[in-house]
Image (cartoon, rainbow, N blue to C red; front, top):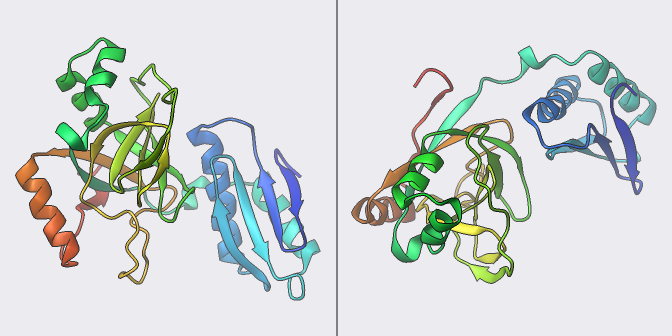
Length: 243
């Protein structure tokens, strides 16, 4: 295989692994392979699950032609076509950086030797790339590519943090979809649901999209949360570079 490794996961899945690093260049290879396989629509091939540096391919062992599948993987990885990927869409995520909704914001500012206002500005003035969804349904792992923070995870993770929390480390930032354990620092909270089972497609974001955090005040937070509860709120979206 060209620049990738195949790992068979039992008899119903195959992992195609690229370079062992977190970068947009490697992740684009993952997305390009996924897109190529989706277009081929090989019989017996099911869900395609992208991660930072690998694509998990689920298949029906009674229907899938594994020789055809590996040949398709070889062709797609030898001739990746990132120009054919879907357009980069930015979704604006409203965030309240305040009080009990931003438990670690002051500590983050201390760690970075900056003001709280500086930290909010750094976090909210970059587009973040969605590498993948994982850990819990709809949970996006995102990153910016400039001005990273210097701190990593907390020394002691919290057993439970609220759904909607925006958590950070280094240049990474995640939206926590449900109450769950987490060892990252809470910089703010969004009233938006990253996973909402009332929708036909419950996940707000998909791998390969982008997000931008938009600071809001407490009154706006409560108003948006009410709209979300009623199923009336829609995040602003636009093609990247065409805001």
